Image (cartoon, rainbow over all chains, first blue to last red; front, top):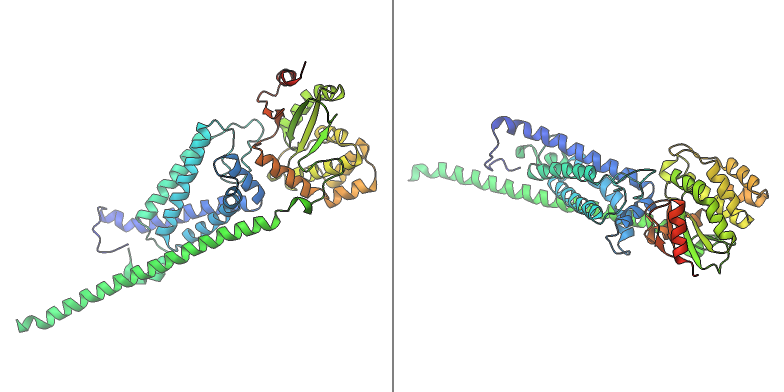
Length: 170
Length: 243
């Protein structure tokens, strides 16, 4: 964050902003790591979950299904350690927009699938109904967090802060 | 004017220092961003590499004798109507479906009206601690070779373990095979070695590619049957049966 930039935040908020940013950053990072870790053990399942959306051409399905879990874990780790937080937050936002679009599309087409967000092959369990509303609400909440972080990425305990040197405090 | 000289020089140098610092910050942020982007890219490549390395070509896994690469056909191959059944041996609704419609389907197979293309997929491996879906399906592959697939499937559903547990052990699967009529050491060995796990993975992948996103899924001549009641199923089969 540029110290000379005019801010519309009150001084009290300004004092808390880095801590709020830190908390949001670690929380969003943890969600990514958990989401990725729950898929990584069964990549075949992850690929099936992507295919169940019936959105991507078949040649792209394995790449997305197998690449996404690892991408999520890497992204989560970047956020947790606070490395390139603004960039990581923007990538998070882009992913979440894509996820929301996928779920909205699945819902609009009347597909009977599980989002596969935290593992699973997209299949619903016994007697399960799709939970598109809750899944979209959750992703929208995470998108808001990613937006806040992209706006104010500077926080405590971050690699970014260490790289920039102490004179560039937020 | 001259008295202002040093002061202005200090101001100019302070400004220059600030500019340099800002430029250095931007440079560092850019380098960090590039490194972060590279980290993400590499992670995706690793994922794809891991996946493709375990993906086997069709000639690299054993298909049970009497089965196809995507399942096993039960009944007269010349029967007019084909019913595709996608089931996971751990799926409770599949058991329910088998309990309700199994007898009727057996009858239609016996009188030559239908043949059943059975696909014992492993969709629910995450719902047991021992990948029971894969083990049960691979064991069914061994049962196909032993010629007791139908009876073994009935045994598996009759003894279905609950979701979220450890599933049945390989020893129990071997016992159920013996009850179904497969008491050979070859069957037991195939179950222990999960000889047909590659076949299970391939037919599971094929099911997913065909758009099967859950179990049970029933197709009558390629058309998905949404309502899985016996009557609806009979109606769908009758509609496709030439008079």
